[in-house]
Amino acid sequence: MMIGIDFGTTNSSVAIYRATGAEMIETVDNLDLMPSAVAQLDNGHYLTGQPALLQMRRNPEFTFRNIKRFVGRDYDEQEHGHFQLAEGEDGKVWWRGRTGLISGPTLVAEIFKSILLAAEYRLGRKPMGAVVAVPVDFREPQRAAIIEAARMAGLKKVELFEEPYCAALAFGIERQKFSRVAVYDLGGGTFDITILRMKGGNTKALGMSGTAQVGGADFDQRLADHAMDRFFEAEGEDLRANPLQMVGILRAAEDAKKTLSRLETATVADENVAFPKSGLASLDVPVTRAEFEDMTMDLVTRTIASVQDALAQAEMKAADIDHVLLVGGQSRMPLIRGVLEDLFGSKKIERAGPKPELAVALGAAIRAAELDGRIKPAVMQRLIPASIGIRVAGGAYYAFIKKGETSPIRRERVLRAAHEGQAELELVVLEGEEPMAADNTEVCRIIIPVAPHDRPPIMLDIDRSGHLQVWAAGQIIYGQSEEAA
Image 1 (cartoon, one colour):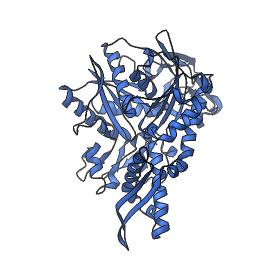
Image 2: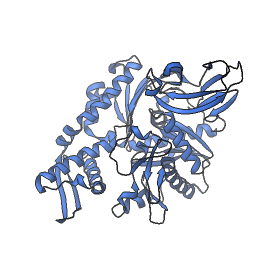
Image 3: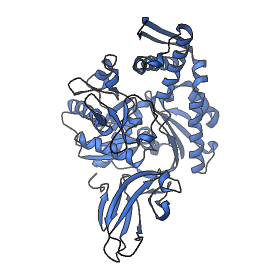
Image 4: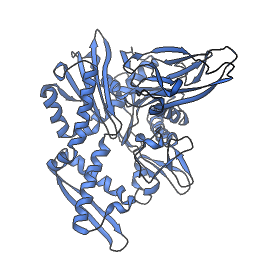
């Protein structure tokens, strides 16, 4: 039995496909969503979800949120100044734990373990496989980190499926009368836009774009910054001087943001702001919807730039789109709907159900049922989100597989030794679009033995599930086969 998992920046969720369709699996707290938070306790054990948030004020330094934004990323790519982060021996982002550094896959695995426990409790048996939804622009090291976390959590079979495709399946997009659809997915930490075309029961992605650095967390931060600025003007105290204060302030900002999606005014309020000299004080800053929209318009504009990029890839204009599907909790913001109505037309915009943040998990569950053979699979052609290639002579980058091609795909190239009698070659596999190897993301680095006069063929393969494999001498030297997945 396979389930669908939406591992989100702010919240995670899980769903299952039954005879009546896809449905959410509630957490042990009887909720559809579980906060994507992990806390390490004094004894080294972990708390996840709501229990982790409840103890966050007592243990802010070792309560980790927004993990999805950093997992699998090189440390030198992350936003510097985050007091919980450090560079691991592998050059990736790690977290500062009580007894040492903690890897990203370890923290994600704790979230997956809690999800699997909830699923086992509700279903009566432990799922052995899952479809895990990931952002369109997740690169291979990030995808590999998620697969590693799933394995650590005990899942035997894992497929990563892009979030917009999940949302399209949940909405039943292939059964609608629309032929050209834009899926606008703005979640807690990432934004994706995908242009889909439906024809004769087939769904094909024509364009995709997005960013892992625009999401609900950024809207929260803008409100928090606004509140701290007003507090400094009134009290002369800089709340940013103590990063641990940010824990409560960000939660207060998130609550105010949600209120502003329903009402015209809200308050960023935190009753437990502490200072060494003056003791406790209260943060109580009113904000209007108009003020909030003004301070976050640039974030919305960045998503629209990605929309235009995806339309350009699809060789379409906004007027060519029949339907726009809103996905992700941040898409509830009235400003976003208004901007999209101005671009596409008011009659084309529709939210993915009453809870747009659940659409991805439901779609992942449908995909899981397809892999289990319980339902007929939808025919969906998936785009390659980034070029994959190798470093060649002079430090240049040669892309075997180009961004925008469709999977499955397989390409090979013969490696040439730099000089006669060379005993081994260093193979560096990269991902990205820059002409020089050093400017792209390194996927793996492998030493390959070379016999005299041997010119080893190298093959890059992306299967139907989006898994990358690197082959040399007829063997997989990086990644896993589709069957193993």
